[in-house]
Image (cartoon, rainbow, N blue to C red; front, side, top):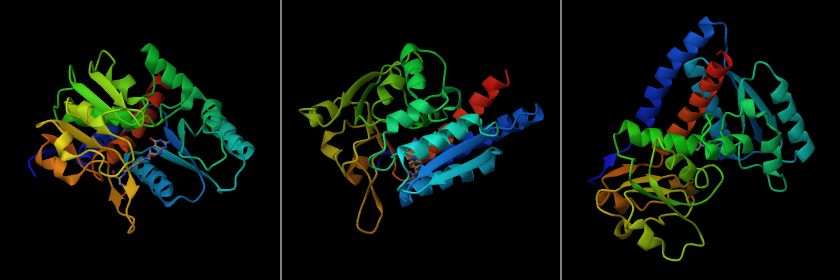
Length: 284
Ligand SMILES: Nc1nc2c(c(=O)[nH]1)N[C@@H](CN(C=O)c1ccc(C(=O)N[C@@H](CCC(=O)O)C(=O)O)cc1)CN2
């Protein structure tokens, strides 16, 4: 192993400690930030993520509002809870845990959220703001990745970043974040329609692997010294995470974000940042 570690656990812990101070300052002004979550169904992974989000809230002093519906919930039942969270004054920001069960129109649910309470940065209004360069909540995993790189002093400005995947939470918004003036990266987005993935990867200074295909990033495709962030989550028969990045990549890359322990904790930390920033904006 030659690569240095992009340590998401330690970086997220540092961010949470900074946030605890900001939450204390808000409380001193009489403002109590509260994160709401809506979990639909029984997926153990989603439940683990949601529980983790509430554990994080408790650590930094953010209040928790937990809403759950069964796997069989209808579109109307889900939308009714979204309307309740929109109206609940204790809930200053919230998320709908994705994915939603089959047959549910997730876009309709996201559109119904009050954009002022969008803690995930995934509301169409928030994504539109990102495109237009207007301040607002940023999608948690993409901005968590930017913070992870910055805090390890990996140069983003001018870097050629290859993003593999185009899902709603990571792949689609990642280039929007990286090509802002403040990041100034050059981005190539690869996906299932890409003809020669290997040729693109070989040119990357930074690779963000969010395809959900085990070990799709192989050592021979990585430029020596590149930073490689593994965001893919597949599971083996024992339920253990298998990432998108082959373990041999650590012999070639300059930096690797392990999986687990890399981008995941940063996703959770960025969610708290969004909740605190929204409360700070509301408090003027
Ligand atoms: N509404 C949203 N839904 C989903 C998002 C999101 O940002 N908003 N992202 C993912 C899941 N996710 C957060 O919700 C998430 C994924 C991973 C982690 C994490 O800390 N992972 C650990 C490993 C956990 C394990 O062993 O399974 C790690 O990487 O160290 C946190 C949050 C999809 N849905």
